[in-house]
Amino acid sequence: MVKVIISLLAILLSCHSYALTKVSASVDKNLTMANESLILTITANDDVDRNALDTSALLTDFIVGRTSVSSQTSMINFDTTRTTTWSTVLIPRNSGELIIPAFDINGVKTQAITINSLAANESATSNQQDLFITTQVSATDLYVQQQITLTVKLHFAAELKRGSLSEPSLISANILQIGKDKESESIIKGKRYRVIERVYAISPQKSGDMIVKAPVFSGEIIMPSARRSNFLSFADTKPVSVVGDDIALTVKAIPTQVNGLWLPSELFALQQEFQPAPREFKVGEPITRTITLTAVGLSEEQLPEITMQVPQGLKVYPDQAKLHTGLNNQRLVSQKVVNFAIVASKAGEYQLPEINIPWWNTVTNKAEVATIAGQKIIVLPNADIAPSTMQQPPSINLENPTTPRVVESVIIQQNTFLQWLFLALWLLTLLAWYITAKRPFKPKQANSETNTKVNNAHLTILAACKKNNGELALACLLPWARSQPQSSGSNESQALTTLDSLHDYFNDPALSNAIIELQQSYYGKSPSPWSGKNLLDAIQALNKSKFSKSPSADISINP
Image 1 (cartoon, rainbow, N blue to C red):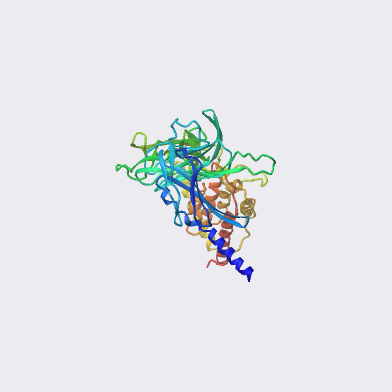
Image 2: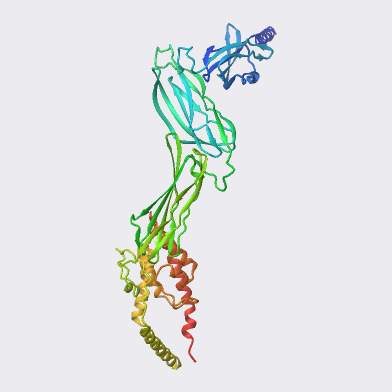
């Protein structure tokens, strides 16, 4: 019974000792510089709810960083004490005399604290900062959707244990980090600093006066410690925060005289390059025209599409555009490079139309047009292409195929006498055909030489497709087409002299798509590996459809 009474008394006494009687507030320094952090520590002599501290009253004069809470219980000679400690990182918003107000913790108040904050450029303080941030923008007066760069540099002379740098903020703006962080060293007023540099691209999406909120660094630095007796000692750390200076921007609206695409830029240029360099080309030889668009103050996504129109007789195959972004004198520079492969099917002079892209000059505040002037090119006949190559399939080594040739259409004009001679021969041919048609049907053995040519052309192109040999397939397309029977609905007088004539001759979408795919793979500036599967399937499907119709034609007997 006595033990029970003693235990109850001990509990009552301990509860009485736990009552909150004192709350104190302190800072690690009373003299600080603007944008430099200090630590506010509030200690209560009891176990208090962690959410009992309300720091909203500090938001007027300070940037309030993270708050850490710790509780401690100790017992000495049966005397139990408990404490609760709040540590908050504060950054003064302005210079001058600032007041940290009193805080009420469960009815017990702390004392108010006066802080003297000095401007960063004041010389009243003899000590330089160990940690600070500088910010710089490429322009403060800009247009809507015009991109500027913000350079943020974190300088620190102390040893960092850990830390993080937040991103800048701007209402109704696109903000994107460019590249990776850069590290360097710098000596400022005789003090050595390590510098971490980060660059952001900022593009406001609405007009008006705006403020770019500078990023905030929060972390811990290692403090010098007197405990150096042995290697098991742990270094003391101190939480720190620092913020850069905010930047005011004036964003102008889109001018009323602008119609169409809005491209605000300090520099907007179009350039072209031909490969090969001479301005005279030959039939069947690919011509590569490279167009480069360079813009300062625009992102890759803002660069417009580049298209090129060509006159009849030319085919154009554009490659996928290549995009590049970089920095030049703290200016964001974007580039778009497009390669166009141009192929002429016949000789002559061709006029490439000019290319115009309107843009807005942010330096002169005027609308301008970037232009590539019209270009005249001369296409000469290809002496390497002989008419005899059109009569039979080429003899090509499958292991070492030769370079394919594009056959040019050749028109030979005859005089009047020869025309009458050919007309007479044509009439005699019709008469012989009529006599032959009246004779009884006698199946004849197909000419072995013709079959050999047909089989050679057919087997050669099939082998090229299976080996994914684009050069050999290009060389065999015309000989294979001439060896095929007349397609339904095609014009018998149509000459198969170019690859373009195959589309109308066969009128087969699958075959046309396969031929276009082969041409793009071969004539591009950067040839890509070609797969012959689509062309092989199209040829086999075309032959299968013709063979399915052939029995009815073979069995039919003339009356």
